[in-house]
Length: 269
Ligand code: BTN
Image (tube, rainbow, N blue to C red):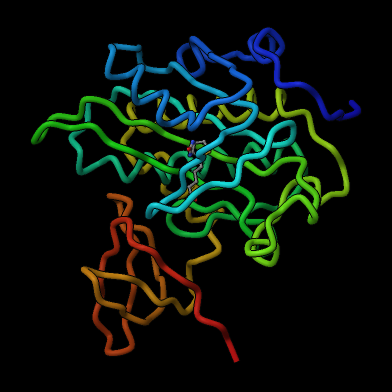
């Protein structure tokens, strides 16, 4: 089937969607400050598990650590899913790993490109970031109210479309393949994957996703520099444990577990 650049239309995505609850309902808007901000507001008003907010463009797209997310119209995917899990807040970081697996697989199956996961929340193609995940949590003590899973995928951007400061580190499906992709098809594929993996996790625990995360990760077995409690450690990323923490063996032979901190690959000489 020939893939075409398309408009992101609600009825079109809905007709492609085979999920039970993720993406239901689906709200596609032309412009929002941030889909995550909107989803947070709706969740606070009682919106259900699965409701997904999509925007063609964002005027204040948000990234991790207070950074922005470049969000021009007509070319990429920006969406946020409301989740109301029964697990405690400490398990929220696992949802980021589940989403990374879903994005990675949806990209691979839709484009044939070998996307990989860079701890904890980036999906990359050939070492360049193609998608990011922002997981935000509302909780009171040990009770999770809701999670907002915000996902941005660079789909049909050309090199010239990227701002200069991220041109060397970012990529898109279009750049990787020289083809244009249907955002509606990719969004539907992604939401289906997300639902399947979330369900598997709920029924079988995190082990249902752990093996696949390890297969798709570009971090395991390589030298890394990781942030741990405000300090930096260096070592080898050896494994993902059964709770979704990255196990790093430091140069002095000690094991450290990273929950959600930034980890950079060390350059090999
Ligand atoms: C990151 O890698 O820093 C996370 C980027 C997350 C971006 C997405 S785009 C949709 C959703 N709305 C936002 O404002 N941010 C997330």
